[in-house]
Length: 225
Image 1 (cartoon, rainbow, N blue to C red):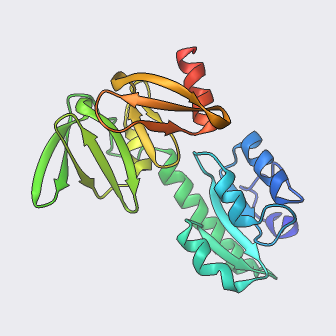
Image 2: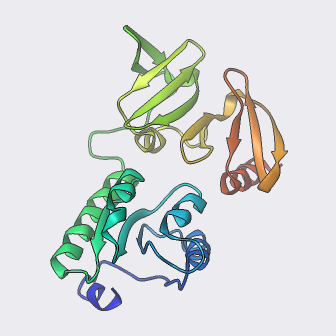
């Protein structure tokens, strides 16, 4: 893989891991945009590496000799699945997909602006349509291709990814709690320590939300608690 990647000058290799445990440690240390991941490895396998990672997750391209795991990999959000020996044209296609995905997720596209507290969004609650102010949103939760919006004035679904909202919401007001949830900091009532250095955050409206280990550390640093 290192030899094949030499011709792709836009790809910088920041680390290589010998097993799944080392992969988790190196990904947490370097926070790469893209990871090439095997399935069968010493220690954790590729899927267990995914389960151990804290958000935000890098783009994942599986590269393995086992074709029977392809469906599960795609369902788990993998960008692509390359079979060994990796064909150069397949690798080139996968890198182009990764470049496009990273550009879209990491930048606000032309014509898009940050959402203000007074802006309203359209959500669907059953057969009812609601217009909810951004400032009234307590939490957002990823549900497949949709995001569930929980507001003081109702809740509903929007056909947008949670990453889309995370990129457009004010980071001084909204905080990524874990892999699938974002919370509005102004509605936080209290927080309690949990096992694994995590935090359980109670909101003024809605169910408590568990902050992942990495996000709990960021939350403590942000609030100096």
